[in-house]
Image (cartoon, rainbow, N blue to C red; front, side, top):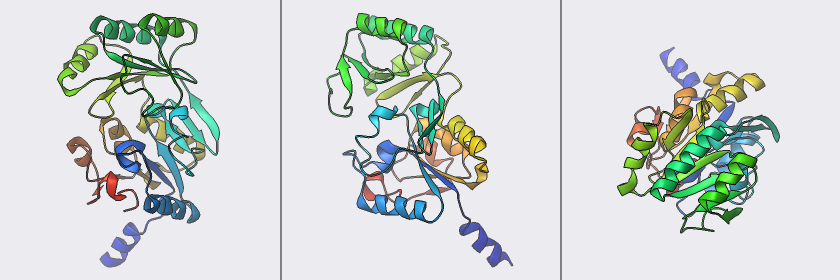
Length: 262
């Protein structure tokens, strides 16, 4: 009987798989391996549904996922949700928060990536064109005007390891926003109350799927809410220690070794 119960537990049918992109599904060159593609296709063919679950905004996804559809996705760390190519939820960063973060960055002359609805505006960014296809160079004054006219979806401050103290200084402002690192260098400022975990809960509620019937795969701090929400939290071998501590399965493979397929 114990063996039978273990068999059922191992071969449980999970309905949704939520997967991070950068440093999880992507290798370090932002590519998806053939092995990962094959595993995703089998997942969908066998009756489960694969969801991209990323901090990226929609227009920073399609140019990188190749034949993988973004019709099912939790993007912008839970601020924009899609299922069957229909937008279920969309929200922006509060303008007051955006202006305070921009002023904080201006005073310290930091590198800023300000994400609008359809374009990324970059300030002091020496990596233009490497990771984003729809972008414009802008000044602090220009981005301030954009905030006042249209608003932003989110803001990212690019900080090297010696600049990490800026994150603590920003948090001391007690902004009504979600502030966390999505990589060693990217400090994300998102709409208050939204996260990957909250986005997953919304999708499951709207599509009538039990949260216990979901898998999550991620590697970094902005994945923690996802991994604490899903039924089976998993991570690649390159995940940060805080992520590994909450995962039920840690792959022996890194993102460069098709960990998602594993």
